[in-house]
Amino acid sequence: MESGPAIFAGLVFALFGAGLLVWTATRMRHREPVAHGVNPVASATLASLTAVIALALAAWCFTRL
Image (cartoon, rainbow, N blue to C red; front, side, top):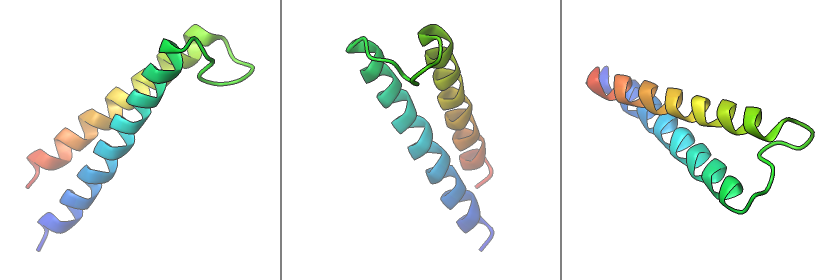
């Protein structure tokens, strides 16, 4: 019964992290800005770091099953 919330949270973090990482990589590959009006290197770094943290949280949630 307690594994349901961990699975849900893990899936949410995994989908968000993977989606953000793919989106950031696609924007950088096409040399388009990740965030408008912000330094391109800083915005790509922050988005990538956020994606990696979300994937790490997903892995942590899945280890709690």
